[in-house]
Image (cartoon, rainbow, N blue to C red; front, side, top):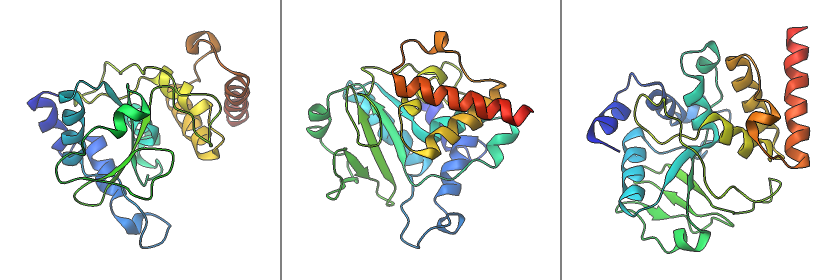
Amino acid sequence: MTSHAVTRLLDSSDPLARYLAQCRVRNSLVEAADTQVPPTAGETANLLAYLKAHGLDAAIVGSVAVLHHLRGTPEAGAFRPTVDLDVFVRATFQRLRQLPVLDGWRADPESLGVVSWISPTGGRVDFVTSGQEFSNSVGAMPRAVGVAANSPTGMPVAQVRDLFRLKLGSYRAKDLTDLLTLSRAQGRAPTPAELGTLNPTQRENLGIINQWLAAGRA
């Protein structure tokens, strides 16, 4: 990230920075007082710069990436909070585990099946690595994730196509709801041709989203 990109990310007027700040207000979450929170905008910028310095291509995925693509739409203001930041890293799980933890950060000793770091202020980052498999998704993660070219902050955020592919393979209802919100904001869901090869679960979930969209327009 360039110094200009970092400065923009730290700007409180940026919707992504505001979203991270809002999610760190624990009272905004209908959860227990010890609910996890994502890192600050500054910590996110430092983390992304650290990964890049170590030659690792990274892209923000998960709900923070969805919020990025919702910016400027009515759906952005009411988008759900998140308890962490998900970052896709183009590396093997073992390669990432061997990466020294960024100064001031610490590895989460209770994390199972995923590399998780905790920022100096207690923000959580979960990493997704190339080809990794998770119990709450169908099939392996992709080998690479494309980065959106329209980020005003210069942040490496996953493009819509890859974000859909990642979340369509999930068993979690909130992931499909995120994609429904994103589809409404964009006026439609991507077509199978735009998404490329999908497994049966991804195709089924895409069909469900289109049914929800059609029901909402009826």
